[in-house]
Length: 227
Image (cartoon, rainbow, N blue to C red; front, side):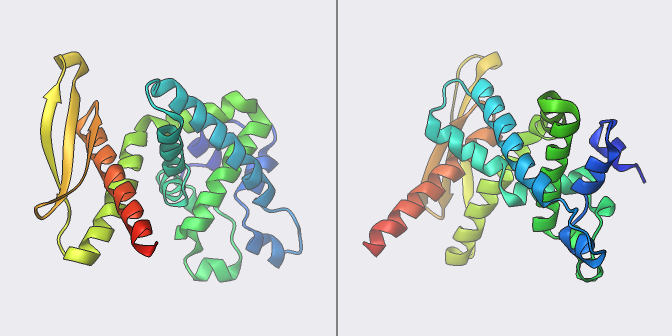
């Protein structure tokens, strides 16, 4: 098994920072120490938000504040961070108390996502913003379309199947622009009912946008019904 430093891709000048980032409070409690990853998690959460916001700002010059906020919220959500941590292989390196160990703590999304944020905090303290940004961008943001798509499409699928027992259908309705700069337009339906529509530079991005639009409409309709 690769070492934690190899997984993170950074040689720590202060290895105790990485050790602390991987130490759950249950482990610290059993050993009578206060040294756990909660403080680093607090720091890493803010550093991660800054890295993601900066990257989205650069990559989406045509998007408004609302769209950028939605994308950011998806990328830093607990399910997404847990998947990132699992992909990175952090689970086997976590230090857990016996209770968490026996109840599947190494696979628990909350523990994995918190540990990932703590690792980002440790990287920031040991190597500065550049080290933290390099880790986030090279290991995760390069594949962010896959993570973002899973969030909105799977959420929509869960809601639709609860109501109709059939998954939503995505239809490509238009393709515009030259080969090197195409824009795809997609509609998402449940049966014959249109739920939403979206556009993107790839079909995946357009489907993601359509799912997000459908969720937004469903939320608005639900709120109006309550009024």
